[in-house]
Amino acid sequence: MLSTSMRRSITADSTDAVVGSRLLYAAGLLLFALGIFKTVSLRLSESLLVLGLLATACASLQLIVLGMLVELRGRIKGKTGDSAPMRVS
Image (cartoon, rainbow, N blue to C red):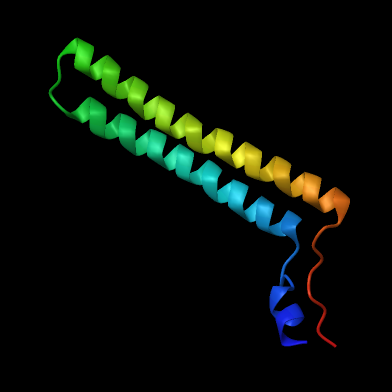
């Protein structure tokens, strides 16, 4: 009895996916803005500046793509109904 109640989810997977994807989108945007600001403020040669800007863009795009995958997984699990929120009576 206790083991089955401990496995139940408190929130729906679709809700978790929405929150997770929004956090990843915000982290990607924040990383992009702060990374560009920091890279531009350094005294770098032209080639190192371009490399730093590309590295910042790649890291932020990875977070955005990960957010898309989390959102897609939440939609798929939401349609199949694998996990429902726990009801308190």
